[in-house]
Length: 190
Image (cartoon, rainbow, N blue to C red; front, top):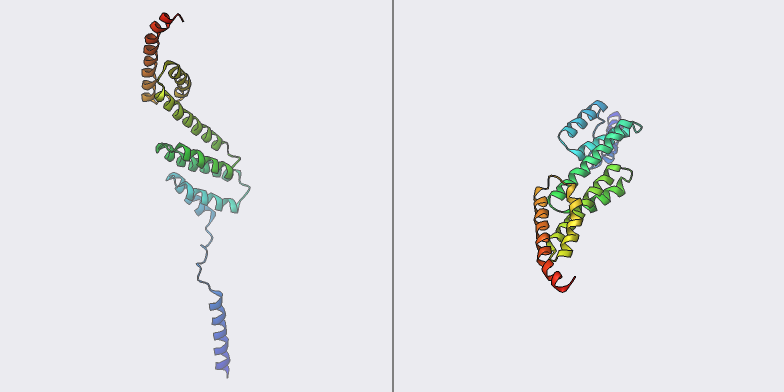
């Protein structure tokens, strides 16, 4: 009788334990703050921003009033966004970069670094439009307007050597156009 009671008891315990186990994996055991900090700095050194952000969020869950962690989180988000935007700019996807920044600004509205990034992309978009207008200018008036618009924009990018050469060449084109039109204007009495 004792064996049957023990067998029933053990089978009941086994069934209860089996019923409580699910197919989902158990969460990771808690990691010490020191280990999280080590992993954070390792992620930062290797520019794995998404991983670093996840680790900072875990550390903030442990200590949500830590101003250093809050500041670090903002820097990581800024770095992550900057790297993403740079990839898009390198691929000449300025509209995609502007859209990405707009989404991030909605998500993180209090981050001034995103506003700066947005302004820089808007300047690049304006420069792209000015370059197109400069290339399309066929008469002296439209060429002069395009040069007046692009010159201050190009001044912000001293490394854009080819752009500066193109502007100088178009300025020469403008001088030639003016010289060519001067006799015609003189003859017409203007």
